[in-house]
Length: 141
Image 1 (cartoon, rainbow, N blue to C red):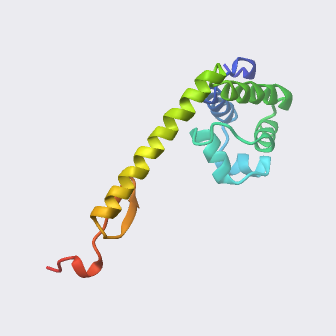
Image 2 (image 1 turned 60 degrees about the horizontal axis):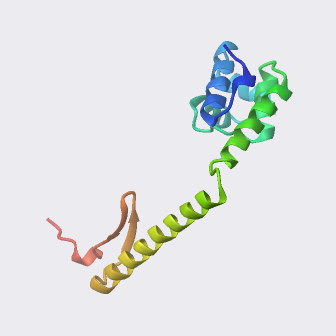
């Protein structure tokens, strides 16, 4: 059942918007045209890739679906408030900042060691930093 008053998390907002889309038996293209949004934006919302649409995007989406925008805006505000309250205390936030600083320092030290020990160019990969061979070093079979 679609009920924006129950939304508390980004996942719940996404689920409710997806249900709204399905209830109206929309296609991405038709809803995009009705809402004045791009089909890619509608797809992002419906697929869950966009869990926190911008205010204007949310209003356009739900209005095109025939919904009252105020209930959905209140739902979005609740989700945003929950996201900003991720740390329950100043000490908890300070602890997280220190943890991230220590992690950054370890990464910098690892990079410096890599640069000292290996003069090959560094490239970014999905799994991190890696030295790469220059084209002249590659074997050609």
